[in-house]
Length: 213
Image (tube, rainbow, N blue to C red; front, side):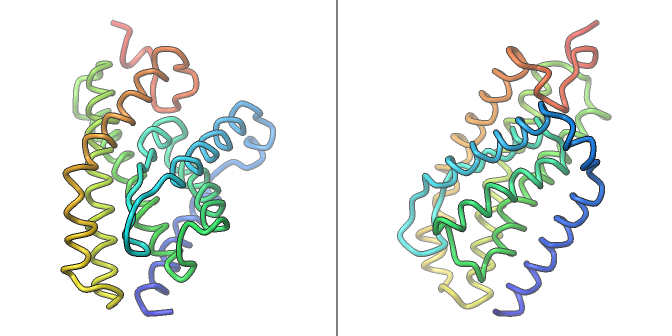
């Protein structure tokens, strides 16, 4: 393993340990609804991530879906749920195990962190309205997440000497304009349906903040 791969694995491991450490696992073990949401989200991510396209190994694109999962579960449970999906995807040949840490850090932790940062900033600094929640907390962070994930992962492949920048740019980075709107639309529509029909499933949404006068 290269230095960057080892660093990525250690950094990803730190986030995982923190997520498990600060999650009330006893409460989780006794909360059937929370279990269904975490494992259901993991199963959905697993299926979503298997539908990928690309020419070069590692330079493949797919929907992330992590913005809606983060808003549903919160930061820590989103990290845990994405880990379950990530392990399942890798077990069926999703990617190279040597890149597991880097891919987990940039493909999971980065989008989850961006989404939760947008949510926290909007909650404390922007008037709380339903449309603000949908667009500022779901639509825009989803678009930014997939763009930054693609750029950062491409930079990793270049810095690690796996591919030349021409190959990365032509087959990966160049696809960003085609990815941002579908990713944003997918997460925006999903969170809209959830807050309308199953608001109790969304950890970060409360009627008293976004709907009540």
